[in-house]
Length: 320
Image (cartoon, rainbow, N blue to C red):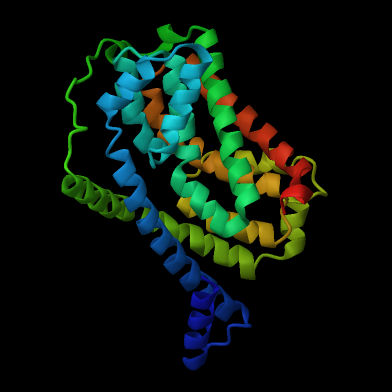
């Protein structure tokens, strides 16, 4: 969509704004990324939601219940890739799966992968960073989800789930028999609902990206997140964890950081931490699991994200 960037630049020039200046460059960056990400968001969510209509929670429970061991964790993580939810939106499904009697490790594999990796993030990452980075990001995210869920299962943490979740009974309604028209309506409604929820964070993310891109000196970014700081990945993960956004809001920030000289692993660690360990989602999760299990979940995700970040730093020259 480089033509769009050129068209926006030409339009701003006609209005007398110098796009080579900091202010002009920031405005061009902001408008271009907002339009581009919004178009991609609506297109991707529509397609993904149509696919998702074939996998309502009731059907997903039946699919997951057929598998055991690490294969169940793999299926749970893969199921998360077709549910384009943020970390907060994934928790009601996590509660439903747990109350339906699915293994706890499987539901945590889903809980990790759903906000961290999905089909939308794969396509959007390809458009921003290229196929190699996008595929590697998704694969490593799935590895974290599978291993994290398997570890929780191995430690038998079921007693640390709140009683009201374990004792709840899931509805057995099958909503998979929809007509094509009903699926299209469902996909349209998902686009509208997701847009209303996500668009403010797109504006915030793009705004931060525009500031980084045009106002923050490269030396600062390189000093904190570049090769000169061996703790850059850890700092990126710690900075990202309390924030709340989904993949669509973090990509413009990541793109600006990478352009300023941040290492790829630090940038991707930041993205993973923001999407998986947001403070609002942890507050919600605290209502359904006890502190020991919550702390284990946070620790698994943080360690996994940091290891993935250092892995990407090590192979950055191959991917870019």
